[in-house]
Every structure is written in structure tokens, then in C-alpha cells.
Length: 229
Length: 56
Image 1 (cartoon, each protein chain N blue to C red):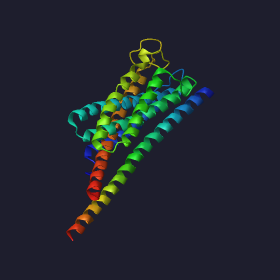
Image 2: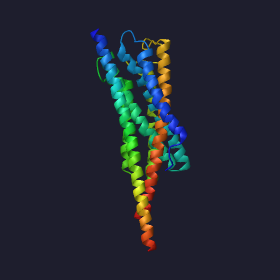
Image 3: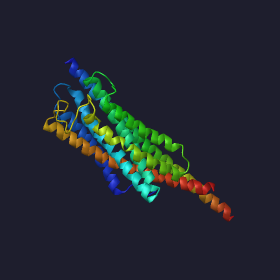
Image 4: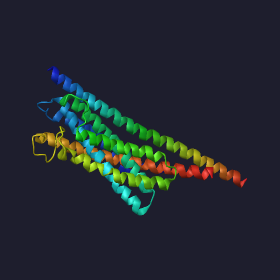
């Protein structure tokens, strides 16, 4: 396996610096929200990781289509990478949201439409990882994975719009217009967009690493087969 | 004041959980990479030995 390309090394360093920068921006340069106080600052990373989580799930659905068209197994490796990273980010979004909810709503969890659809989304893709393990044949596994992630991708827009189509206590960030819409100052909005940008970059970095790991494991499998045959 | 401190504790707790989960995932990527490299080297060595044995 070739060593890390220079661009990836640069992304590694940039990601670390920018995450620390975004954290400092949240802690030091963003004002406290009047009612909730410091706990509201969880929200910036919560939104950012939820965004990249959904981005990854959508990316996996797009990659799944490419696999179904080309039948090239490398797309299965890429699809798995997108799902795995998104699962981690989306898990973080759920946990951060839960901690915020404990202070804001007085409970760690409630079966609100947004929380419920988010939990279902996470479980759909967790099941994807588990079900893949049960299939030995790489082509069958890839075909199953592609169809599954394509169908699973339908739950992403449902989770996103759940706060708009159902009655919910979850705040609406953009385009709500009603009383549920969060009132944020310009510096709060700036911090939110900085966090989203930073975590998009972190996602790209981790995605690249995970794809490399996937290809390395493929190489290990091929070498192993050549020895055992 | 007490409310503010509690709110601050939740914020710190949230970011600690976030850091732990993120670092654990990055560590898992590094570990899996190292293990895969080790396996690759091992199988390559085995393949080499096998071809030498066949030639002999």
C-alpha cells in the first residue's frame, strides 16, 4: 500500500487545527444564549456532526448507484467507508443532542419525531454493518449493500424534514418561520457555519483514510487467498 | 449562579463525550491499519516461502 499522499497529510494537519479553532470559536468568541446558558454551546458541534452524518449517508446512496451501474467492487469499499464514518458522526449528534435536551427539556430522551427518526436512521445503518458480515460472497455482499444503502438513504430526507411535517419540540434552525425557530445572533450563525465547514473537511479526511483502509483490507484478502489456494 | 454552573457542567460533559468518541474512532482506524499492514506482510512472506518451496 502506498504511503499517505501529501494532500492527505495536509488534510490531517488542517483537520486537527481547524477542529481546535472551531472549538475555541465556540467557547471563547460566541456569546451565551440568554435562557439556556453554556449548554447551548453544545449545539454548534451537534448540528455540524449531524450534517456530516447525513451527508455521508447520502454519499453512500450515490456510491451505491454507481456500484449497481458499474459492478466494480471498489465502490462497495467506498460505500462501506461512507456509512461507517457517518454512523460515528450521527451517533455523536444523537449523544450531544441528548445532553442538550437534558437541560433544555428536562429529559435525556423523548420519542419526538426528530429524535425517533434519527434513532431509526442510526439503527438502519448499524444493521447494514451487521448484515454485511453474514454474506461471504463479495459480489453478493456488495449488491446487497448497494440496494440496502439506496433504500436506507430514503430515511435521510425523512429525518431532515421530520421537524417540518410533524408536531415536534425540536428547534427548527432554517426556514421555520414560526415560534419554534431558533433566534440566533450573527456571531452564533457564523460559529454554526464555521463548525459545519470544519466538520465537512474532517469528514473528507476520515473518509479518505477509511477508503485507504478498505483497499488495504482487500489487498490482505487477495494475498491471503493466493497463499491458501 | 447554580443554574449557570450546572449548564456549564453539561457543556463540558458534552464536549468530553464528543472528544472521547472521536478519539476512539481515530484510534480504531489507526489500529486496524496497523493490523492490516502486519497481516499483509505476513501473507506476502508466506507467499514468497511457498513459491521458493515449489521451485525446490
